[in-house]
Length: 209
Image (cartoon, rainbow, N blue to C red; front, side, top):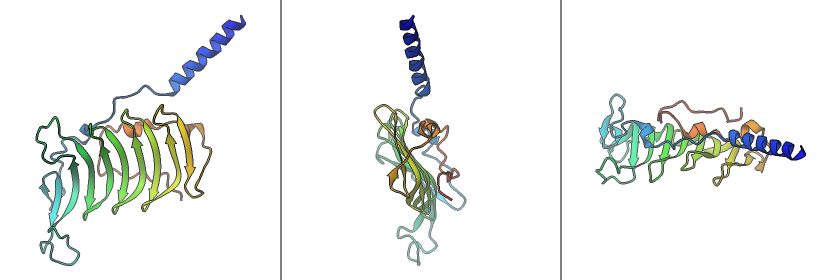
């Protein structure tokens, strides 16, 4: 009878352990951008390759004008190889939204196989808001919040090898801190957006008030 009880407990614990880690989902790929070769440009902007740009009034010679004669304005997609013409082999390095030639919105980075590698909210070319790193399998392994380019609040990390919780860091104190079980759970849904929206509203929830 004692052996049966131990066996039951062990089986129950195993079931809890397995169910605590959600069933793996296929990794999100650059397909989340939609037709990234033809993202819509805002009014007054024109398409230049995989970027949206607006021409400078004085063709780059006026005060504060970009030397190239135009500025990025709206979505821009940067490819790993600009000379690749085979649609099946084209790989995105990163995609971002620009306002007056500065990143403004959510930036998505992809690895060499086209899998989502990281997400970062940005404002005025600085990290501002949520920043998440994803494994090739689609698990979160690092989560942090930034304010005007500086990491703030409580950042969290998980082990790449097995996805288990590693530590939480209080950026103000520069030391590890205990967190609730809810915060120890990996928010893998962040690495699986249905759509990679470059103009998404930033997540500022982790920035201390």
